Length: 450
Ligand code: SF4
Image (cartoon, rainbow, N blue to C red; front, side, top):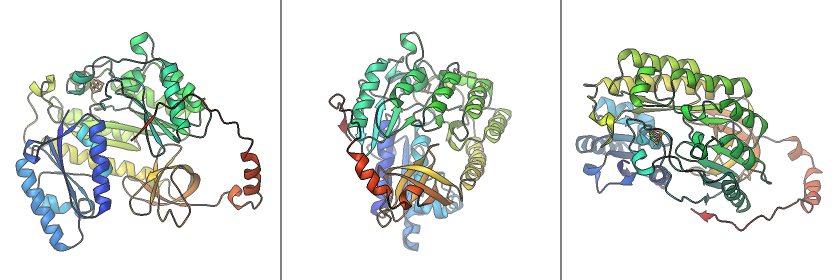
């Protein structure tokens, strides 16, 4: 668990982004510090309206980098003029808002609190399926708080998922510290069966699988890929943090997988699914990481080309074994992190570029900044639709969009008319059919609103 300090400047949209970051950090088990001096990480969410504001942002970044353990700069100025911070010699990580939480989580799994209940947040239902993991990673402090995996039964989790759907969830996020080891405490890993059963629930919704370590899903990966191929409710998306391309480093990290197991998982999904998203994490600058180890990580990234990549500079967590290891000196971590971040931008940019001009079925998951909405396609890629109100697009809608452009973390799209939407008789038929829909009332909801 790390402590954080967030400072936000500028408009209400920026404040909204800070709230999102804070929510993700709290979900990950992190806590606010009393001030920047006490924080493990300070986050400066910048604005860049006028030149005077820019000067203030630079000055504040310089002050914070002197008094806090680690500084992350995000927001409009960071994205538009990020180089100014480097030119001013500010020691900070420059990140897009969406990248901040995973950077701060430092490669550790998110914390799932004991007895966590499902939560409905807009049309997103959060479903914690289990708490704890089966690993003992040498850099992880989360493990101290959560312990060994503790899995409720499949029936219990399916009932919670059903309650979420009945309460209005259009996207169910299956979460846990390590979803791949669900059921291991009761003798057998049961994630494929659980997902299959959740997808069987009546209703129109999507399911997103949360973080699953490569070591946890290796061994059930073929069965899991079959379940993904058979259920269109499941976003074709896996978040499997590899952390390093070097087996020596993985051993020192005490990860349960080696590079080959990770590759086998990826190859199996490549074989079974046409379009899917691999999300993975790399920790850069682990104390025992040599230059050759770093090159192996770069090679692995270039080889598997994940569509979503989190790069985290290693930082010591108190009480962990890795905290007692002699760290890398000088600017090595910073240089390796910069090199990997540049490669990441190239790989991710290529993935988004390939979407331009194509059409995708999406679910509108949440409101974005201004009058935009955030949508997800079947591979959980984020597509932003702007001027949503004018176009009659609302959260919870399923629609078709054509991708018109992209930046480094999402694509932009315009709604396109489908055959059904242009068929003048379709609305009338829908109205007539609506009365005959079989509505499964199900049990009372156990869902609380966020
Ligand atoms: S899998 Fe590793 S990083 Fe994740 S909670 Fe367990 S020990 Fe920590």
